[in-house]
Length: 196
Image (cartoon, rainbow, N blue to C red; front, side, top):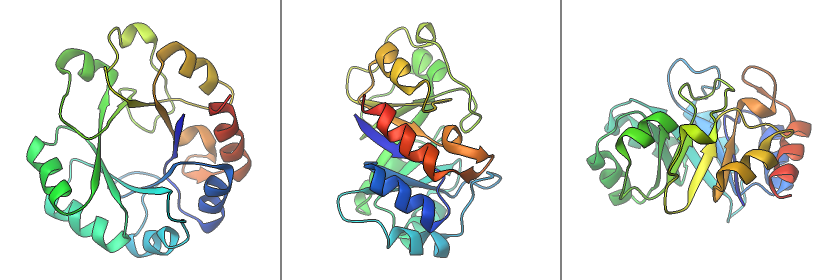
């Protein structure tokens, strides 16, 4: 099970995620988010991450030139785009040497489907809100590997993995003591629970 811990902003929480065995750590560059991080601070945190652990910059509805600039400043290996970004944004990221993740709500995936993106993350309607969605909201999951997000916590992640059958999970608010503040103990508990 691929595990991504997102919205990290401190050395302690990055270290906790890496030591717990997370496969990826995420940093949010979407304006207005309580998890927003400055790219220079993110670069210091990315430097702490060992080779083999993916570093992901998360963006929402931002111009691709801005996305690529911030990703370069932070030194992340992957960009995750939330919104209706066109295919050429993903192509430009790939041409720049970045891996990509397209994040989409379960409702939008059901309505539209998506093919050709490197990876797909299926989230609740409001990303970062801590709300889940039900299996019936995703009657036909993606046919290739995908990440489940939305309301995942240490106490529910195993059951949701069993219900949806994703190849990976992505957590943010579910490992926070207060909005935007990650708890190292919750991070460790989540990674352990996801690998039941």
